[in-house]
Length: 366
Image (tube, rainbow, N blue to C red; front, side, top):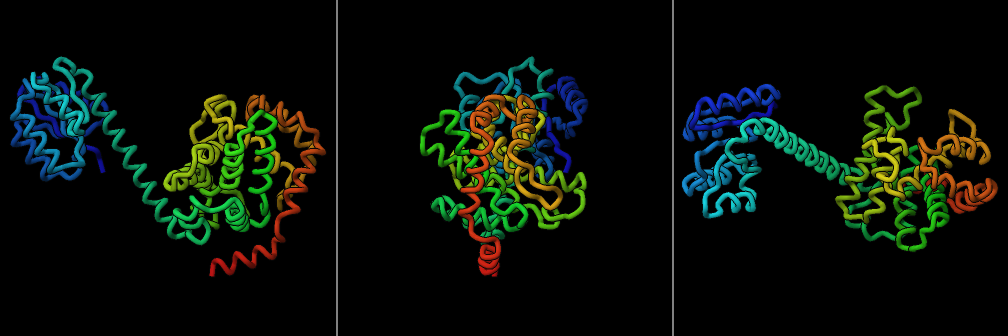
């Protein structure tokens, strides 16, 4: 549905200048020459998102009109070009969220850009709201996999690990991935001087939950034996944002959310979803990125053999400054390959057998 703007001004020439400016920015505008005409358009046009009005002076009568309009159409953005009156009415309207903005007379040239920004802000809010609805629906539909939101806030570390193991079983070849990466991330964090146990626990939980957004990705894409199409890759690329939206709704702590949202960012800015660079990527996410790569390189996959930890060191060093934070790479290199191999063995040896967990997961699903 095309965004539309209703414009009213007592001066026709002034109105036409602003209309032309808006249309140059591809903003659909319905001009009106009087308040009565503008009210009629707004009553009949449900697409109207913004009302732009220019008054010689913002007096009590005009304020009453705007308040009534906002009461009738609370979803409407109202932008005013006017001299504020001496009684502080303009400030009161802005403070009460009746106006999206007020511009001084003589600022006509800036009006189209301001309108475009406001329409974009509305579009962003609408998209966020749509994602919120989708995530709430997914949370309900996948309650057996993700757990109910209220329960997820209070679950113990052991229950959290079991949940992520169950999710790993959607793809048996990556069974134990979350637990292994979580351990690597904690070890790297300690090497880098993080000593606060609560923060370390949050890093562990964030690593366990890093792929929780894949709950929303169909099995037909996650388990597709052939190459993914560009559209399917686009859906896969949504999982950090989807996962962040889910844990944000259930008020998980900041560190967990940052790992989930940023775990596919690259140090040189070529990652996703935001293309962050260097220190703009949270430290915990930079730590996790290397831990994730270490497991991906050294774990067996159906499409390739596992490589040893010496090969992993070579590949990680090659990625320093591009994929990985050089400081995190330095921390990784401070432990010899056999130490990392031992950490992997000790972590995976504690996991239950895949067959036993698969049986438990089937019972949960039924």
